[in-house]
Amino acid sequence: MSEDPALGDILDILSDEYARDILAATSIKPMSAQELADECEMSEPTVYRRVERLQTHGLLDEQTKVRTDDNHYSVYTATLSEFSLALDTGSFEAAVTHTDDESFPGEGESDTADRFVKMWEDL
Image (cartoon, rainbow, N blue to C red):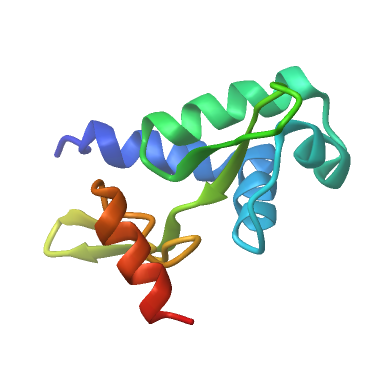
């Protein structure tokens, strides 16, 4: 019986306490690497390594926050909503559910006019 490599990767990531801490913190609100380092009590290099792994497997989303002083920075948001694992007739079945929440109405729209309409309708 061979195990699905993606399942093994997801289990490996979720077994990492630092990765779980990052997912938990970013499920509450978007956070920068520095905020994650402070909140989760880990170094920034550790944060960036875990963030890269989480993004590779679609468990974390990155957005750029624009600042007027040209010092733009990234914030991260958990996209993992649920992970389930079932053993059924000799094989494992895994399911990963992602969140569909937009940080603001119209965020998913590529056209500026459509984005503005969605934002206006949500007021």
